[in-house]
Image (cartoon, rainbow, N blue to C red; front, side):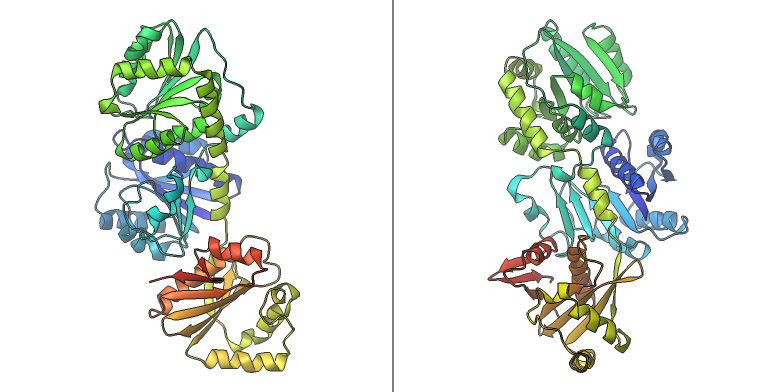
Length: 495
């Protein structure tokens, strides 16, 4: 498959979007896919990371995001210049919404959006929000995406580099113990716009007899020289810039002081407890929830945090081995480091197209329908004779209130979908063709059908499906496809 990423990076925007896209891209490359990035010109600072990963890139000649229409047109031209229609477009950008995505629809086969904010509409096939929002996660996107959009929600899908899952498997969690000198990892993001790193270093001077600091900044941090100078004047501080192996550093340390960004999931994966501040508005709510549920010690927005707050928080963590051990265990239960692999496998699902069935399909549909695996959970489980089937098939094709569709994936038949339409409701019947079972394609087939119905039958507002109570596998498939079970009938509201 060919996957294109659209993301930006700069000192102002930070590098978080870019790095999590790299993590996903590297996993896709391992699956023998091809990957290309489309970024703003400022992201050229990170071009070495792309080339070292075997990723080609197009850099748009602009620092900041244009209007939606202008940026969409530039992206379309960049995609057309690649000479191939991408199988998937991955978007990680706070200024891109459904208007941009609709413009790109004809030029890509499917769209995956990475979001954190839930503050704008999206027209996408898959939406990923790797952050922690507790039990209300799905409600956040209820009116912002299509009913058939596949939602990948929570840190289970956190896009971490492979080094974290590898180090986790090699290094089982250790109990927190008291030490003479505690190693503190300070990382306030790759760019740290408010330069909070320097304030943390100065604040912790009073604890220098108890701690060693590992201070990390990104290559694009405009204040990195100032941070390096501060560390150089303190023998208990070690300055590290643009570190390649963050996983090994995390394993060396006992406590972290960090911003509430993607680094949270990296240290959770490896069981590093810590203190968090928010340096961006989108970090605040997530950090509050994580603190409420016992994952972190959250001090609040950096503007309201005093230097004494850092001292008190680090002292608390140093003198509370039980708290460190509790946080470490909770974090590892939440993040296992396999999120990028899960998302890459979902992207690798073949693109599904639907076409109207014709008389030429009559014999094939009869054979597929009569296969034992499809009859097993059908409301009519006996084999159907060909004459009876042919009569029914012709009636369905002639009916204005029925749609019989053949699903195709990679030029092979995938399944059959039938809709019996009554007013604004459609009753769905669906099955996979032999050889396509057991690959996790059922929910993707149903979602493709919902998209087709929404586009081609504008009067239909609700889809219904009946499933035998004993068919637990089908029940899970319908829930995964965005249906809700109601009195043993599954339904999906599409308008």
